[in-house]
Length: 159
Image (cartoon, rainbow, N blue to C red; front, side, top):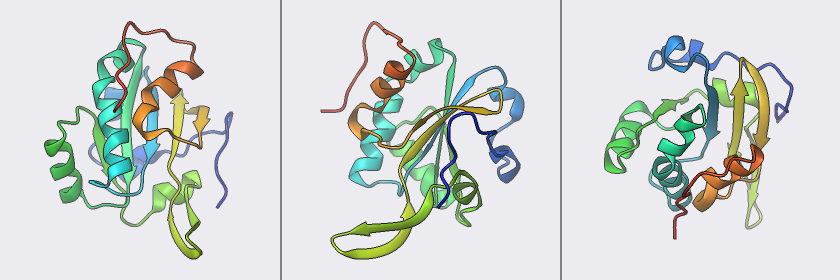
């Protein structure tokens, strides 16, 4: 796993999806967050925290896009169930995850397996501006605001 870092040129993830039009994200900072699986506790908390703060993120010029190895149909149900206002990309073949360096070996309770390393990249004009390798799922929006020293009037954390 070779995680991309700040200052690197971001791979063109748009070429792997037809769900996002380049003009819809032009001029915005992209919060590209990678997560393991729809409808799991941590991934749901992260998505809902970004959802609850989406208006504030947009006011600051951000657009949110989530990527996991789940299928489009799973993403559609997950987004509908939790009323997610942002796009989710299915990366079943893990091409995008491999390009960003977030797919690789993980260890849990002595078990070794391949999986998604929960990571967020903030992309500005095609360049990775910030990387968050240790995501706080219940308070992810605040992590982003802290990086940019933004003080929104109210940030909603998941309890």
